[in-house]
Image 1 (cartoon, one colour):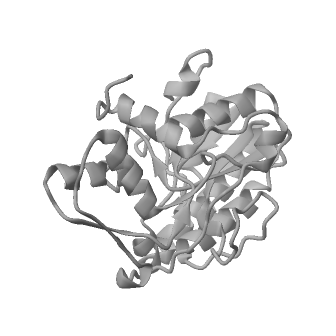
Image 2 (cartoon, one colour):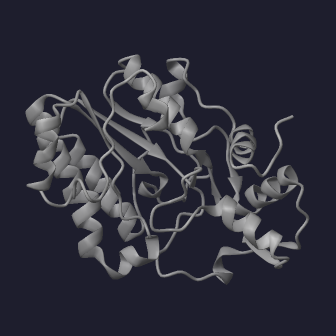
Length: 271
């Protein structure tokens, strides 16, 4: 909303305004008659997804189908925000748009199915991002990894972070700016990766946060198998932005984005 409202007429629909899993509720889009619908709705608490697959597929899969059907009917482009979790994490190099999805948890399976339904509207963009951090924080998750780390450090807690899982941190403002450029440039419809460039382990991400913010907590690397979770997670799910690079829209490095985020949140004074 922040990025697109400058120069475009935008309407932000909250849970009160639309329930994507209800096809009748999605009819509200008909009255708005938009050119583009950005579907950010998701049930993304990965472990809870294992316990409640019905809700997971209702939102992430059937919700995507409902939006695809309505947008196709009214001639609007459909943007579906997807995830690195459509991949299994066995690859040792970053996943490109042409890499074969093979999700290993309920959340990832529901999002891959959501991608498939989104394609029922020929005018679609599937935009994959990963390990998201943004000023608003994640709805339902109470913030993000950056804020959690800073909060623990400020409380003087000893911190252990997984060092053998790698991903591409994504700043929501950058992902939104990329999406704006894609729409304004009328890029060909299809699947795009829009994570920030580069990748790191969660431990390296935490280390960068503390170094930039001038914090010095006790930080210890640990292994993923020491933190067993209900949902299996991909060990390596870094994304590469091959297609955006072809159009001169390659996102900046994740650590540059992190610095701007820390400034925006007031954790770091602009140099």
